[in-house]
Image (cartoon, helix red, strand yellow):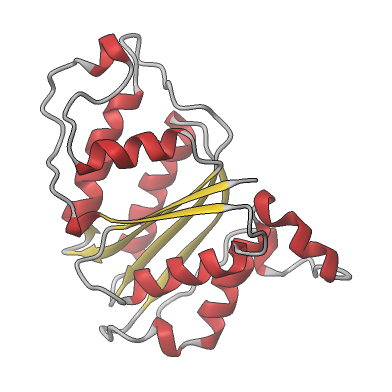
Length: 212
């Protein structure tokens, strides 16, 4: 039994990052014993870190709002899917708030208290600036892998050309997203139906979807 926690930080319900994350989850839903948590940050009553430093004493965030519950969900997750659209060449405000509150997973000595080895998939969507989107994805990776010791399964950087339903009508990115979900270790029994996986398959590494 495994646990997948997914983070949606877009303001748009059923937007492109929402679509891609849900397709990843679809790919991972091969075992009914797995549990899935999908968190829409923009719907939550939450705020950024208040620097109270209480988490350095207790090991968890003291704010007690909706986001505190998400953080505790992440603590016990086997796999994480994090996503953000690119707004004004940076992460969405909701993702930045979430990332800010991840400070509660750092102890008084600057060491992560989050159990290491959580599988990670990063999703970044953008309209016209691939370089900035790649930089955002790289920054997320630096924090989640470099600090919290997640194992990166892959990154999807998707150009939506300013269309809210672009991903929903893009079979290629939907297929890649499903394969990423199927590549999570909790979905391994699914691979018994696959004779072989080509070396260039999306499951072998990062598959970036560039502007074009």
